[in-house]
Length: 173
Length: 173
DNA sequence: CCATAAACGTTTGTCTCACCAACGAAATGT
DNA sequence: ACATTTCGTTGGTGAGACAAACGTTTATGG
Image 1: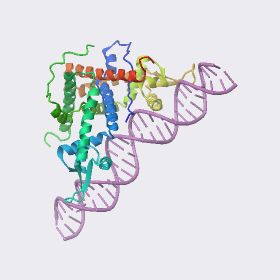
Image 2: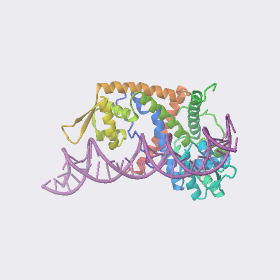
Image 3: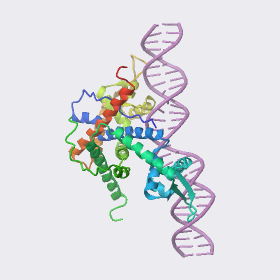
Image 4: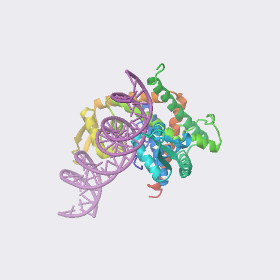
């Protein structure tokens, strides 16, 4: 996962700063967001790789811990992983004994995925690991600033999530 | 650029460690960053697509405007685009008449890429377009909050950029 | 009841994107 | 002069997001 470079790599030496617009080009929020997210992704990826895990492993384990055993289809909806790709994730988790895949007797189309005790331990490890990564990522920020950042991001996400709802789910649909 | 206004009054959700970890899983900064950046990327991508452009088109045009004509290799270093991929970008920009590719008489290995008047106009269009996208992206935030966000992100990026320098470039290298 | 439709897990394929390898052409260093 | 390096270009790799289609099983509706 250490393959994200970025579209930046420039230094801030904009000697031609005659305009606010010119200075703003480098500091476009969308750009800063992209770069920062890339950095975060790199750190997370490396951290998880060191624990023989990936992003989706963690997502599945968390989903299972939060809402209990579920079919792959349900898990796919809850985590956002495409059901095609989820197969491999479950395979890998099962290989490591973090999860069990059993046919559902009540509906023989489904597989019931259950987290194991070992899986819970693993998830706990990853929790700590990821907390450490957040700390590393946000190192230059004070606790108050970190809260600010997450709050701002959450508000942006919320805004667009609701906007998306109005478009498709519709106000009267 | 004063980096911090007073960071005091963010809404403190809680200070409890263990519960915050559980509740924080959903709110992991790295996750929020990823989602927000994805949203930003989508908006930017759609916006640019509507103007028959892509991210790297803009990056190249900006680089050319800022530092004048350059070879593809130089352009590659300045934008972070791999020189392999840059070929296609220049092709597309040249097709649209936004850029001109001419052999360098002084060094016949090089191509000198020059932005055209049309390219400048195009870049200006994209500037406005992207400004609009930023506005759309940050819609729920006040101007002060937007500045806060970009400042926080810039500080994070700066921190990690310098950390990377120490690792490879080295203080004494 | 039975036929049709839908949901499930899986395999396979497509598309994009960052990245690398190697090539011929041309310049540079020794 | 020769080896080394740089440049533009082509082609390919590997990962990730997504879609299509298939066999199996369950639900639906005449």
